[in-house]
Image 1 (tube, protein in one colour):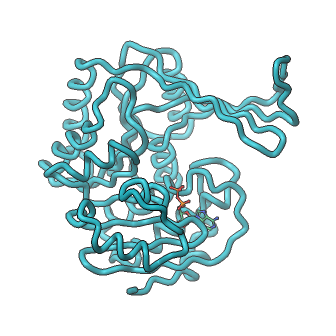
Image 2: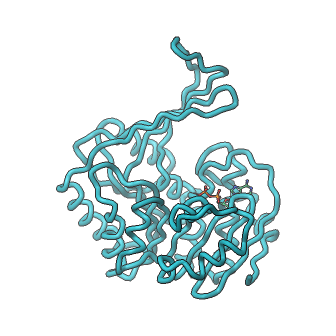
Length: 312
Ligand code: ADP
């Protein structure tokens, strides 16, 4: 079983509008409301791939209940810790060929809930093979909280796949217990090492993967590069993953789908080249769908065959 962690889930609302009129009323006929947050995208993709998954994290109030109902509708097993505050809304207004987002920061998590969640996590992870941790941490939680959860997971010999950025990622990498895998995109990697990274500059990225001190103790690093595929470092070897051109419909959530593919491949002990191919196929399958964090397995085999994995 794969456990997916979402510490700050949201009820995502999308408002399609031809034009957004500022300082006036805008009426919407077809608002869409879905369970959101990077970790929930990961869980949805794993469920769509018909692999066992449990989604966990923190949920509260009426919005938390709505999110749980949405997960139940999608047959996604979930065991969240209930908190005494409302979970958040995130609003995306799709207008004038643009997307304007209004993101609530969400609840501030008190010490008691932080402690309770650690216990909840320790109990759940006993049943898991691997665990994914995705997205930002809610207010009130220190940036080293993922590092604390990695301690718990590593004690139980469970592999952690960490997909976050900024200070939470830095703290997790500085900690004595490490995640097994991280999956930054090129911008997130750049933020981590304070460099501007060009997604097509394989030499620059491979140099960072082999020499950046903060990365050396992480067994497996996948730098996802959107349409350019990925570059991976396992132990001291760099692998170049080349993908075919596809007709992208909506690439939002492709990184989450990639993480889902990685989690499945690790839980099924795929070889490294197969793991990299599966991860890329999942990212591409998401980019081929209109819905964020969704895949259609019908295209899996055709894409898998077109991916090349080579030692760099
Ligand atoms: P993130 O969403 O975290 O920024 P990426 O944009 O790197 O991650 O996407 C993850 C993976 O999804 C890529 O490695 C690739 O396999 C696939 N993907 C994303 N965007 C595209 C695209 N425009 N064309 C083809 N594949 C894509």
